[in-house]
Image 1 (spheres, rainbow, N blue to C red):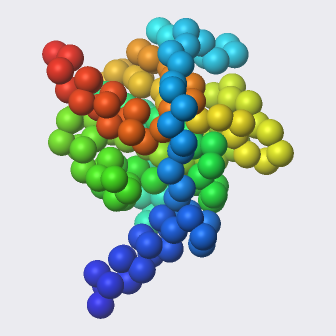
Image 2 (tube, helix red, strand yellow):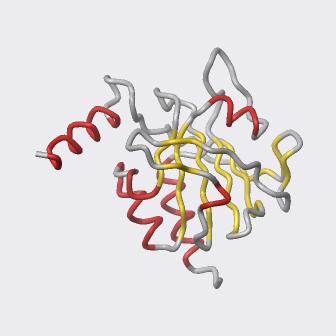
Image 3 (cartoon, one colour):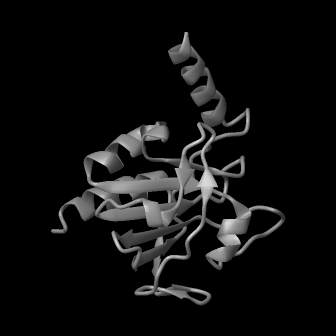
Length: 161
């Protein structure tokens, strides 16, 4: 019964109509050196957020070899999903398999902390921050989609620790 409840919660959160998850349109991502004052080589701003399942998320607590923080422009609910809670396209499983932490969401207060543009109470475009285990920013990307993240996870796997 508990498993059925998890599936119902998952499909509710991931359904485009109900207000959870909608794929980003792949338009070709751009690699950036900075977003406002946040630069490659600087420390990720720390935050604390909770997933719908109650998992606490904080960059300082996520200690895999790589940390991917994906801010979705069309994520229809405020908040985040992390690692194995991200069932869409198997991204959470893939991140875990590749020794990475993956966080996906659109919390506007945290997006503002990261210097992202907010337009009409939503992100104007999607951003991806990739950091090392010390939370030093290695890469920043703009206009990212889920398929891009799959490619980047695979690429990061080939990078030696």
